[in-house]
Length: 478
Ligand code: GLY
Image 1 (cartoon, rainbow, N blue to C red):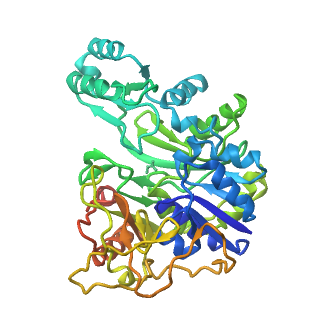
Image 2 (cartoon, rainbow, N blue to C red):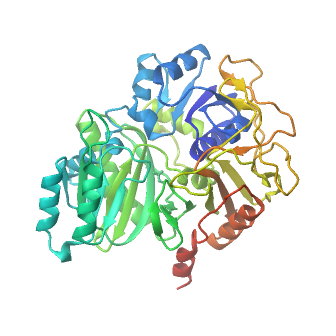
Image 3 (cartoon, rainbow, N blue to C red):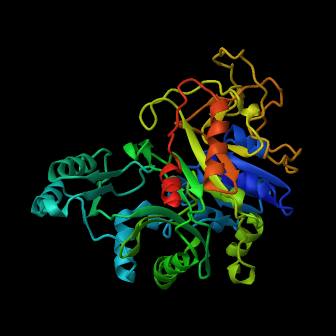
């Protein structure tokens, strides 16, 4: 079977890596992918915003199963286009993906189906929003101001008082694009601890994935701007079987049943960002896909064959499979970022040290590329020679990496062929560059392994949060 993963981040690298381990999978492709995914299989140079081109490539190359990574591709209706052409694509349709692509739609859906979440109001008019905020007492603050639509995790402001809430509402409602009417949600602030709870659905049956915790703020101590995610670990000790059952019964199953009842069946991964409050778990937001960096810490713990699971979900037959099997090990992922992320960044810096990463760690690539390849054409390398002596071996994965049997020799017209030249280099190409994942019997072991591995990797301006998992270790010790 040939599998295609759509996307270019650490999540997609991890998905390709896991799919390639299935005995059922003979070749793995990632579109457009990054340096890491191209080591697992082959990259295909088509952007996620071109569903027709992606589907045509999948048809021409006899792809058996496609897994959609990013929300942008879902918003472009990639699953709908694949299905129209008779292709098997795993992810929600554009209509079902509204659970993520429109926060206003998702909140109204939760209200219709009695799914616990913070009370909210939505506005597309700045005067109405300001009037509402001015009507609140100081005791009603903080409030959360969220831009409707996709914002790569960055469209959320927690406003401590009226002044900052009004500023956030004005900024989010300023018309930025011709023809697009911005919309915001203003909702109550929920207190508690956050958990990323993902579940896989075939439209009717839904199974939980192991819980994870991610870190959305840029800096230590949950300070600074919001990001796409600075690190994660799994499992989360406080989410035991009883709490998992409660989350499934009160949040996840009612969501899947509600979508089915509204004739928008939800097939794919449902990611619920939850707040564990003193009055039970509540939904902060839904995402319509695997999380990043949660996927990078989850898939190394998944002992089941991901291809078999997704294949069954596409056939509406999850109930026929045995439950998912998870390793009891803990994984902890640290995201190494470019200087300036989540603001302006520069890319193109050589990445060093990947070959020195130890055996208890694994590196997934979020934003890397081969400097010799740009689109279908070779580009002159514009590499920074570093003090460590310039060239490095073009490996790019820790020693956990299982060499894929899947690298197909047959030439696919649009698949980028990257030179296997051992002296090729890897350069940065995004704000989040690598997810370094440590593994061990405890969170402490996994965390130590991840930070040890992160220390041997370098590129100009590299930085990361230093406290991924730290507060949770202290809590566990209490
Ligand atoms: N880690 C947050 C997300 O994937 O949206």
